[in-house]
Length: 259
Image 1: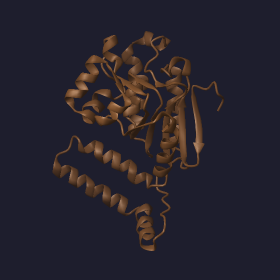
Image 2: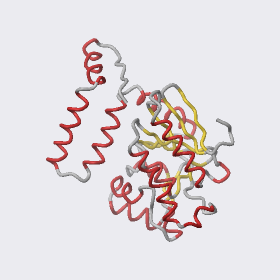
Image 3: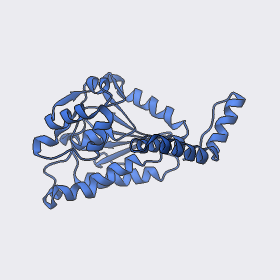
């Protein structure tokens, strides 16, 4: 892809990295950028060679949220959210392989919730997360109202959303908002190593694990147990389970292919 594309794509074996590419605007979203990102996500979801996806931002920021100069906002904030953020959040949450956020700088507004909606977020020590919505009289979107209380509890979710205060990556890791905070110089290497590790694992089982954990938050104990049994029945009849068992018995590395 050309360097002037709004979304850059790079493949490292089974790992695909999509980079938001408006660095002069801290990768803030426009309608055009959202459409390109959704198209790239659809392409990656349909590519059987992709077994892990990484989202990151070009330059010194991950994503500063919505570009308030975007002409599409003239149609109404709700229209933009329904048109772009709703399908983006749903696509990532239903992705057929693990999705990692490599947070290299500020992640604000919808940019913060884009990162938090990924399966695992790894942030540079200098990165920060800002629920900036209250500063412009809005509520968290891109899944923020669902994600925040589940990640850090109601009290912290309310505090982050109402104040809009900047939260450093170290504190975000400490309170369980993100998976890990690492030194800036180590970020790319740490994320790539994690992505390659996940790419070698059973993608279908990982995707269903995400689905089961999310669904269980609204289930009672008995329903969750029943859902586990259903998923084990599905996965137990698939190739990757048989491959995993044979690899274990033969003391060799498994070669998972289901997706």
